[in-house]
Amino acid sequence: MNSAVKNRIKDNAFKYFGIACTSFGLLMLAIFIGNILIEGVARIDWDFITNFPSRNPEKAGILPALVGTLWIMGLTAIIAIPLGVSAGVYLEEYGKKSRLANILEINISNLAGVPSIIYGLLGLEIFGRILGMGGSLLAGASTLSLLILPIIIVSTREALKAVPKSIKEASFAMGASKWQTIWYQLLPASFGGVITGIILALSRAIGETAPLIVIGALAYVPFVPASPTDEFSVLPIQIFNWISRPQKGFAINAASAIIILLLVTFVLNGVAMYLRNRWQKKVKW
Amino acid sequence: MNKLEAQNVNVYYGANKVINDISISIKPNSVTAFIGPSGCGKSTFLRLFNRMNDYIDIFKMEGKVEIDGKNIYDKNIRVEELRKQIGMVFQKPNPFPKSIYENIVYGLRIQGIKDKNILDETVEKSLKQAALWEEVKDKLKNSALALSGGQQQRLCIARTLAVEPTVILMDEPASALDPISSAKVEELIYELKNNYTIVIVTHNMQQAARVSDTTAFFYMGELIEHDATKLIFTNPKNERTQNYVTGRFG
Image (cartoon, rainbow over all chains, first blue to last red; front, top):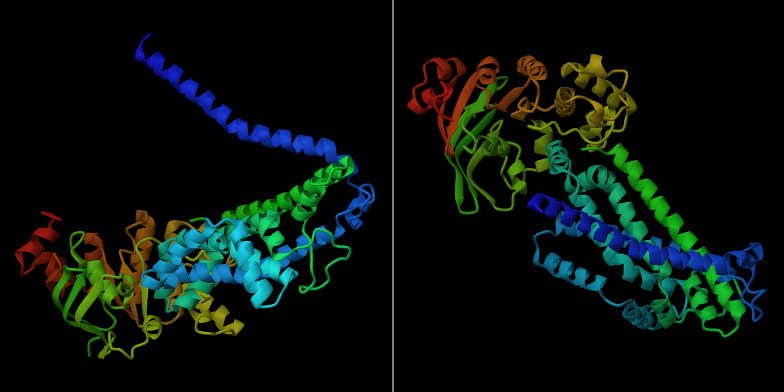
């Protein structure tokens, strides 16, 4: 066998090995989703979405948890987006060389690696106790905001970095100040990247359970939260609660709730992809 | 009086001295060409006049750079004001990723001008000055990035003209363009010199000879010779200038 043939065999071997590796994760996910669908899809109807939790699994629904999840998403977005984007702009455009910015940068990278339950404890102490928010939506959203800030900051910086230097130069040469350059040129040009980062961060927040349990989110909520100071539950906590019950009916409910949670996440990711593609078509360098 | 003046300017990048004791005077409504081999400091020197080097962290300078007799490195000079007076066109066309219209009015918008009549008038006037109006008048709302390279560069010139500067700095404005577009830009420079003081960095000897009134030859961070373009190209005083313009080195 000459070396060219050998090389080709090796080449092919690696290709199939790669395909196997790639399919492994996808296959597992497919099995999981298939399983969940078989178990849970029959249970989903309008009642399931509009009912309150109940001791009777056939009557139980996810309304408070779903509304709680939507509230948490909205509030987290309102808190985390301005903070994260501003911090990203500062670090990338203003603080690049200062020692303070360096220290901040290292800390932000570290924050991204902190386990989420630690954020829960931090949120419990600062938002729940010191600021007196208790187990409210506001406390939950603030805690999750802390959790996803590093993601938003890092993706904002990456998006700004991707804007060609020539655009910045052109703007400065026209007599624009730094702020005007950021506001009129850099942010619009990097919008696609920034928004993608934001939505990925939010889809991470949507699945978090641990920090919310720590700050005292409820497992049983017989009301729909109506203001940011109300107590709440979210879908992951509802799922966790149902799964830990012995009756078979609740396991089915959990599967159905997982389908709804996945749907919400997919919709968010879909929006992210749509926005990114639309923006990339508009901005070509 | 001289429009632009530099006196005993030294520039350092860190410990590296890249401009060595250069003095030059530039008359109003003239075209001055900066020529010299790559890395000779001509672009750095050009960027002194609108303080674009300020963004380089390791940049340091000594000496005086004046426009209309005012030192632009004075502490109470506002850089944004200065740059409205001194426009710049870059080597690679760099229109903003916005519409043609928005590209032109950007300089006015950042000055807080909102009056639509003024904006519209400026767009037409600047595009006509830059000889681009006829080509784009029906698609002002289209993206500037859809224009050809040559059109983009003329758009960048129009954008610069819109804020009515008195000086235009051009850093190899035609080097990224095809010969026809390049010729159009040259023609434009020739017309603009009646109303503006233009300084142009170029690697193209013929271009320097065609468009400029005076030519300055830079070599290794020094200004070797600055004289009427005709003299530089036919009868330079310095041997190195002679070698460069005749293509014997560089």
